[in-house]
Length: 231
Image 1 (tube, helix red, strand yellow):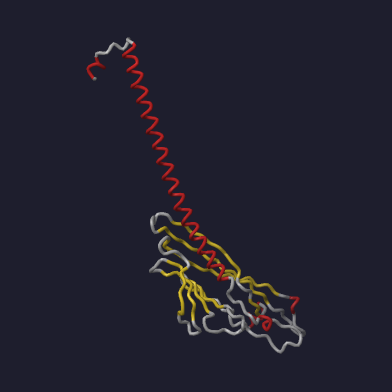
Image 2 (cartoon, rainbow, N blue to C red):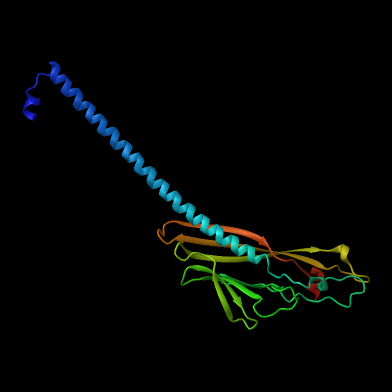
């Protein structure tokens, strides 16, 4: 009791044992508190890492699906008619060549059935649905109406806040492809799309990540830069 502790003869073996026991208990409690604090911090850090990893994996998966489909853009099953060679009556223009960028969207076309003709349901658009916070793949009719919608992100897991597309073109003159009698070579335009996406976890909006990736599209052939400036 407290009375016994106050009136204990600390020089005796009994009181010394009690003192040692209390000191040992205090040290033990201190060590237990430190261990619990360290364990709690480890769990918190591990949970944060798991949330970040989950978000990174989701954004990486969305970008992978976006890039895989964009690489089909401008594919033309009749592309051999767009290249000049001797005795060719004329070069045809790729009907799937056009790629349009919008605010948070990209519209493109590719020859699904490889018949060389732009037909129904061969136009597509990838866009961010601002109200749902998702990325969607839309299939369009020839008139531009949406015929089907496929989600590319998990609405229950992530909220996509930003989706942007940036396009660059690099021109290279094909001097070895001069047609007989021609004075200017055709130009090969290498097109590249940079896709950037930002998302947050639905369960914890403070966990946000931004990822970006670049991919080349089907190249196009045009007139030389000099002839374009003259026209």
